[in-house]
Length: 329
Ligand code: NAX
Image (cartoon, rainbow, N blue to C red; front, side):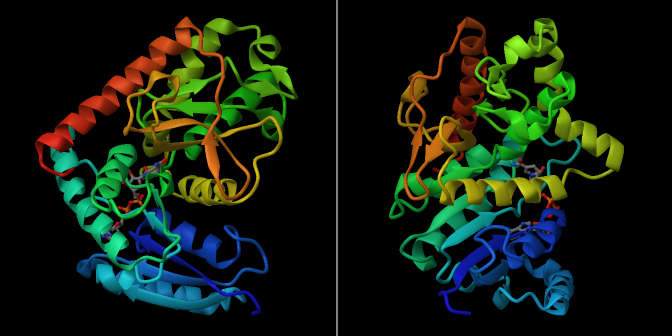
């Protein structure tokens, strides 16, 4: 191994998504086939036994790029020297639980993790939050780690982008790889807006390729918004492999140049672009040169899109008000 290993901390490492994600990271899916990695795997105490089994399996893969594995339930140890922290672990919403209860339970997790990342992570620390409600969990962690610049914090909406691309491909008969410029705006929730107006299929506006605009404005949006629920219904558990894949896609897209003319989706700290309230973790169309990312400016937003974007922004404002009231930020 010639290159210095990149250290990746993953919380919720013994969970479903972890079980898919860790093997992808260790095999080079994030940083390429010549980049060694250290894995720091963070779990809560009751899951340490299961995590031990995952570590045995990682050992048994004998991944050439896997330099070290550190399983731990100690946050200081877990985030030590982390270049990337992927925060997957969180408590799922249970029947009868209000959204505010969930924000409160998970909020406490993310205040502690934000502080531990600030104290222990590498100078170039970057953080991707996957655990739900991911936008607001990320907002909490970021606000509890003020020493880390706001442009290093991300919440995952790439799974929604990938889902939207696959729906447009299926409807048009094109391959999903020909669908570009698909932005998810806002929250990773049922209010998210998959922006088909600016999407292209084979370089042609999706609204020209797909003449059924009623479908685009209706079933397309709701299918993407409700895809997670449909998978739970069919599989009996929430999406895991596709979520892990989207996490890999997100990190890769943030660390390599965006193809010319295209963009990708991830929630970042709003700078006020498109009139979105500053400081909210909001998914925008993003472009990067592989080092520095930017919100793509000048993407047309028509009246239909504006109403959808406003609805998802309102939801994020409400979530922020709730966690502010709870004293989490
Ligand atoms: P699992 O319940 O299988 O695994 C979660 C793991 O997190 C468990 O092993 C648990 O012990 C651990 N954990 C809980 N609290 C922790 C803490 N304080 N520190 C470290 N670990 C902790 O859930 P899984 O299916 O892996 O999903 C994880 C999260 O991803 C959920 O919040 C889920 O809602 C969210 N998702 C987010 C998606 C997105 O697109 N942003 C899509 C997939 C997924 O729904």
